[in-house]
Image 1: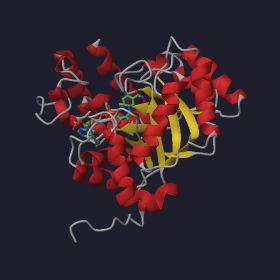
Image 2: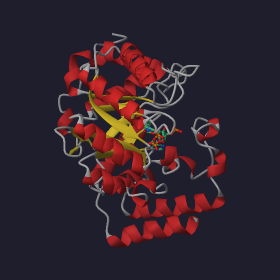
Image 3: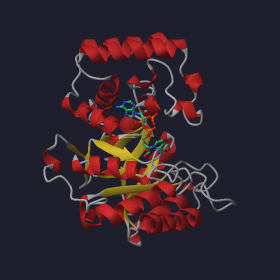
Amino acid sequence: MINPVYSPAPGRYESGIRFRRCGRSGILLPEIALGLWHNFGDVNPLASSLEMAHYAFDHGIVHFDLANNYGPSYGSAEETFGLIMKKSFAPFRDELFISSKAGHDMWPGPYGEWGSRKYLMASLDQSLKRMNLDYVDLFYSHRYDPETPLEETLQALVDIVRAGKALYVGISKYPPQAAAFAYKYLRERDVPCLVYQGRYNLINREPEVEGILDQAKENGVGFTAFSPLAQGLLTGRYLDGIPSDSRMAKEQFLKSSALTPEMLKTLLALNEIAARRSQTLAEMALAWCLKDDRVTSVIVGASRVSQLEDDFKALENTAFSQEELNAIDQAISDKR
Ligand SMILES: NC(=O)c1ccc[n+]([C@@H]2O[C@H](COP(=O)([O-])OP(=O)(O)OC[C@H]3O[C@@H](n4cnc5c(N)ncnc54)[C@H](OP(=O)(O)O)[C@@H]3O)[C@@H](O)[C@H]2O)c1
C-alpha cells in the first residue's frame, strides 16, 4: 500500500520516554517535545513531516509545539499538522498535547501581531481551523507586548479557556516582572499559568541568570526550554563546516556569523566532554537542560528522523558529575 493507515507503536510508552509534572498541575509532559517551527512548512515534503511526527508519537513524544506563524509560509506548519491529524493522529487526540501561540507577526495591519484581545482571539480561531482541532491543550502569549495593557492580554487568555478553545495557557519570553504579574492575574481568575516557555541551553542561560527558572518553580509553573540545541549549534552539525542543507546555510534565523573561531573551539571542547560521557554533543546538550528539575521538558526541532533518534537517546543519561559540569562551564567561559 502506498499510504498505509497509521498505526502507532504499541510500546510507545515503554520506549524510554519519561514524563515530568508541569508545575503544580495535573499535566505530565514528556521530557522531550517536538517543535514545528522549522521543517514542517509548505516548502517541506509532507512525507518528511509525517515521518518525524510518527517517530515522535511512536516513542511517547506526545507534545507537539506550534505557533500561528511557523512555516514557511506563515500558518503552513499548522496546516501540515492539520493534515497529520486528519491522516494519522485523529483517533489518538486524547493522547496528544498540542500547543500553539500568538504574539509575533502573522498578518498585515495593526491586528496581526502583539497582544491585543482582537489579535489573540482571531489568531487562535485560525489556528484551530488550520490544525483541524476543536481545542488546543495549551495556548501561549508568544511574547510580552510592552504597549498593550497586560490585563487585556491575560484576560483574553482567561476567556479563551472559558470558551473551551484551550485547556491551559502559558507565556513565552516575558520579562520577570511581567511574568510575576501574569502568574498572579491568572491564578486569581482560576486559570493558572501552566508553563513558561523560554530559550535555554548550554550557551544561552538567561532564564537561570534572570531568575525565570526559580520564579516559575515558586509559582507552581512549569518551564519548557526552546532551542535547547541552540538551533543546531550544540550538535555535531557544524563541527566540520556548514552543511548546505542546514539551518545556518539559510542565513535567516541562525547566521554563519555565530560560528566564530571561539565558538567552534567551544563546540569542539563540548563535543569531547560529550564523547567521554559516550554521548553525542546533541545528546549531552539536551541532557544538560534536563538535569535540572526546574525544567519540565525540552522542545527540540529536527529536519530528519535520524536527528530525533539521536535526541531521544539523551534520556538514557541525564546525570552529570560535578567534574563534568565544571568542564562544561570552563568550555563555555573560554568562549567569552
Ligand atoms: N517561544 C518561542 O519564541 C520559540 C522560539 C524558538 C523556538 N520555539 C520552539 O522550540 C522548538 C525548537 O526550536 P529549534 O528548532 O530552534 O530547536 P533546536 O532543537 O535547538 O534546533 C533544532 C535544529 O537542530 C538540528 N538538530 C536537531 N537534532 C540534531 C541532531 N541530533 N544532530 C544534528 N543536528 C540536529 C536541526 O538543524 P537542521 O535543520 O540544520 O538539520 C534542527 O532543525 C521550535 O520548533 C518551537 O516549537 C519557540
